Length: 173
Image 1: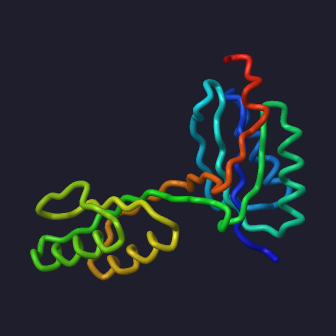
Image 2: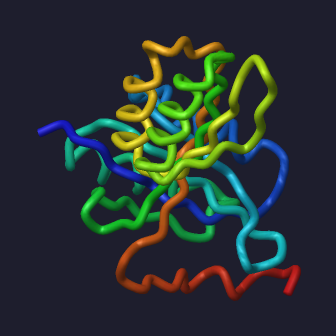
């Protein structure tokens, strides 16, 4: 059965790693739903957080293939229920009517968002949450006229502790 998986890959921070990782997905005709790359607590190590839709067998194959990439120190796949995950979004909504602005601000606060910036013509709302909560707020704001929307990729940590064994072997430590 096809479902969302989050792949966490810990890599050496070197040129070309992203290309080698994405080729693994391209060869299997897998679309990357979300991709975030950031530094980790270990100097010289990056964390790739990749969200894809696939079945369990294909995920297992992809993880095995990723482990063959020289710069990858550790990699594992997780299902949503095993993770704490969030995204961040910025939404620009045009509004110069006081009553509408109050409704927009109320909706933002109901979803844990905040007004990050405001002018007489528009508001910029910041919301951090799941894809579903961001989508819900977006849909509620649509009638007011969304002018711009930007959303980050997923960031995630497993609920249980998995300490990548190979990260401590970095030559940069």
